[in-house]
Length: 241
Ligand code: UDP
Image (cartoon, rainbow, N blue to C red; front, side, top):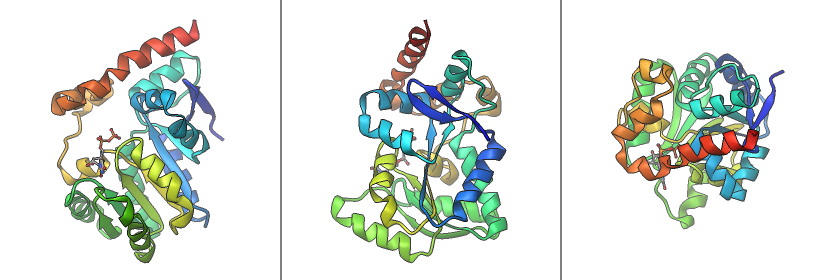
């Protein structure tokens, strides 16, 4: 059994990629809906001031170490974290498993057209994958019930929600019990990456823990959000001493 470790009071599951895929798989076989989050430094920093997000994360069934910053922070505090489990990679690995197990996936989120493109990409990359529904992530509160009805009518047992942090976690937490899926994951920009709308950092940058820098050069509008990163590092260091 893996450990849960605290990074600035957010509990992170110290799992490997393989363990994470197996855990997600075990959730699908249960009828209760499970909420899974992928935590990076930005999310942990957001949770410092957003108690609703902090509560959701601490109640989530699984929180994987999505970002290099979170892995660094946990290790800095002396915890063992086997590896980074990037949400986008976890989703790809889980789609492979979903083909084997005939899971039915619903893609919810992103700009109009993104989920459809992500579905087309998934179908060519993972032949036999069942993407049973798609819906863009721009909606008003009045359509929320329609969205839930659509997801439930699709027969999906797995829901990927890409509304950005913390919107996706809050939407999921609010609606989890109304959904008939047994696994729901907040996946951030994953559908954009799958659709080819946003590029992933080259492997050498991922390995050098520089994926955040690549994202910054690609999406300079993220600079304000990324100011959270040096704050995160400082906070982790000063909390220890
Ligand atoms: N998004 C959405 N609805 C919204 C706001 C955002 O569907 O109301 C989508 C957006 O189009 C993008 C994703 O949410 O596909 C957020 O991606 P980002 O890379 O910002 O994810 P994060 O870093 O927050 O995990």
